[in-house]
Length: 105
Image (cartoon, rainbow, N blue to C red):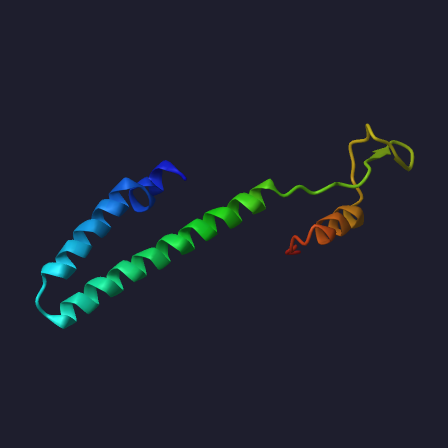
């Protein structure tokens, strides 16, 4: 859990839920109790969505793409692990294999 979300997910969240539960018990109108319960439920849904989004971001950041073999281009293109060039089509194919969408100009 990141520090910026600690207040939503950590001890302060549970303290706020406890205060909300106390308020719900003390309130004498049915509508206010329902509203307090809905706020708590909605907050839990937001926190779950935030956690899912952070997990997905971490998965995307951890993804790796294997680039094709490079080329040495002096007289004619020759495959070489020490080359300075990649074939454009080979790079596009590697990105497509990794299911990364490509926007071409």
